[in-house]
Length: 118
Image (cartoon, rainbow, N blue to C red; front, side, top):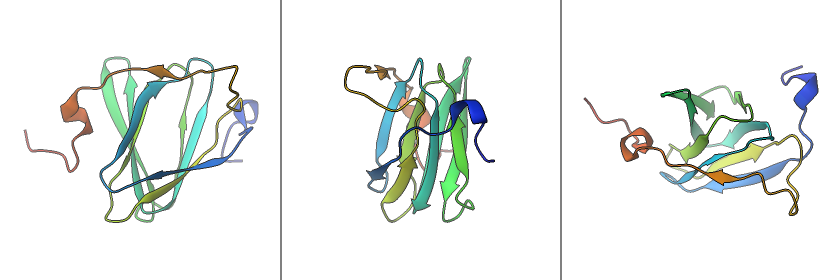
């Protein structure tokens, strides 16, 4: 099983990001996120404590599934020449009466792609 039994997806929907586009960052306090890029390439940036970590999925990354636990702010970014088609698989499912999206801000340099040399 590729996702833990206690947070199996309860919904699946498609997010499409144009090349270079960033979705987020935002924070879910109660919802797990699982993301698999099925066309193009995805860079997921997560803030873990005071550090930023990046994960990749898509055509160049073996279509890896990336899990984001509740309480971890994250942003999705299309990093290829074509739009990224991303399966978004939350647990629990999104519901209009339970809006668990909280805005956060990442420093602009964290969202730069390709990365700039230091």
